[in-house]
Image 1 (cartoon, rainbow, N blue to C red):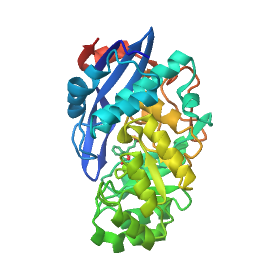
Image 2: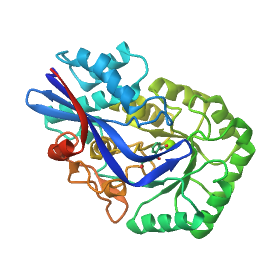
Image 3: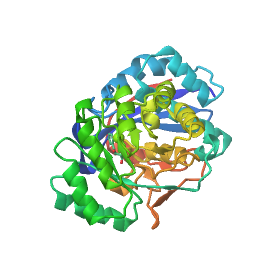
Length: 369
Ligand code: OSB
Ligand code: MG
């Protein structure tokens, strides 16, 4: 494929409700979209970098700058044999900035699948026609409100509830939720809010039959996660810490956790995601697909990825309406009554991008030829 044109479109979408985690709150998302054109085909990608560098160091404005100044000008007219070659090239020329790279690489996957007339899921080696889905609930004002939200999502059919935790909103909260919902699949996510000195406190989560505890310690911490995992029965799951296949190999070697959360945006795209998936499968470590409050484009990529066989837990791949009044793709993603999302079967990501709607919510765009 020769990429003839790259269009960067920065849009604004307001979340149906603010999403609060231990490191910050998102009210609205400024989402950077990538459109690649080649030989009459179009591929779409979405950059997951948020406004503020509170999940990782990248921000949406940094990603825009990286793409504009370094990545995109070098990509236009460069011949690529496959999306994997795009991934190799992106990793070879620029250090870090994997959220920026991922948006371009994922657009190349969509483009390549459309050129071949196959679904992204089948091109990646997907084996499922629907993917099990959970919901991630942000930090709430109180337990009553939280329990109501949980009940509502269970009613909709979500198969797993993930609760954000932070020091001061953790053990007692989870204890009360467990009392109200004794049998549900429940997990917690700390977004790196704890320090190694909190290990005793974290060990007490063992009483609540959690499917996992996600990213208790800092993003660059593998040894402390390994030590915690040795002490507690609950599975430790790594999110922020897994920034690449190499980092995943280190985590597996050190036994820093028993479960890996894969977000293609965090690890540089779908090629890296698939490698992480495969190495975890070989190590008998189950994975699941995380989310970054994506629009329909990133969601479509995530759902295609989650159709691979070693995705063993419900993903944060919730329905469009959990996030947006109106999604930017048609059809929007809907939850089935049994708590799954159907994997699109059309070419590429398998959903149409509503470009007129994009125009109405656009902050800026930049074209390269
Ligand atoms: O840690 O998984 C996370 C959202 C933004 C940043 C980090 C995380 C999250 C979520 C939401 O948990 C997942 C989703 O529903 O997209
Ligand atoms: Mg997380």
